Length: 351
Ligand SMILES: [Zn+2]
Ligand SMILES: [Zn+2]
Image 1: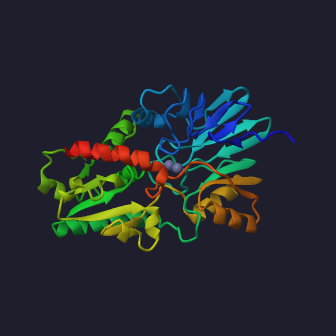
Image 2: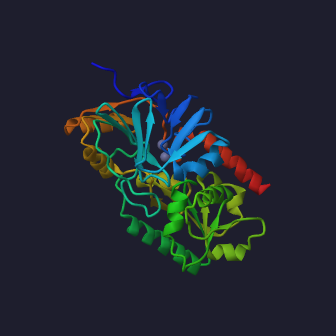
């Protein structure tokens, strides 16, 4: 039997025919990047290929890289192998990578979310023979509420804080959740203030032509009383810092898929936990895998062991594979470096 089109190596997912890697975690010549999160987009590759809406965030995060960008549906040929990006619905610019050669089709999902979040190009199922999927939330306990309901909860919490004279701080990851929250807030309640780390990402996206709701970067002279009537968007690394404490009194809400687990809110000392994720929930994962019509599915990160077992039980041909993807959901250790970088920036802003 011929070698599979994609293989799992100690540098990342590799296509020998095309001589390129997908989301490699060690330096390579040719890297195709699903999205700009730290566990997928590393520094040190010679050439990068990514979706055009990832361009400015990649430059912001990785510096001066050699980057080629494409639109969804645009095909790039590498040594006879076709590479084409499809929307993953995870964050702005996130892509699934379809790799095809002589009738064999593989799709690498990267991270994905099946629900339309109103800001990322919605997830599109892609038919393939082999599907390489994440399963960050591959347990039945992870079932997300419809987005409309979620933001009704967020907005009414904000409204009641304003009525009670409390500030409002909402915490979510700087690329993805922050913009999703921003676009779904009820701006008739008040203004949106941003932590520097989030505003830097917003600015990169705006440079990329993304239209976001108006935001106000918090500075030393931001008037406290005004800020209290608005809502502050902050990254996880700001939690518990002096930067955050100076806005007291406030109510602090934490947005994460992990909030579906009992105790998660308490562990983060949050007043409110909002179950919000940029990843597919249990049903989303199963339906997305089913929609590919694949003959084999490989699970890269998350609850890989139990999810693989479940998929095999219900008739899929599933395999667990080892990668270094950790998921930027803030409990993952892979994002430690990024957290450190963000913490450093918070300290800078505080100095
Ligand atoms: Zn991601
Ligand atoms: Zn990830």
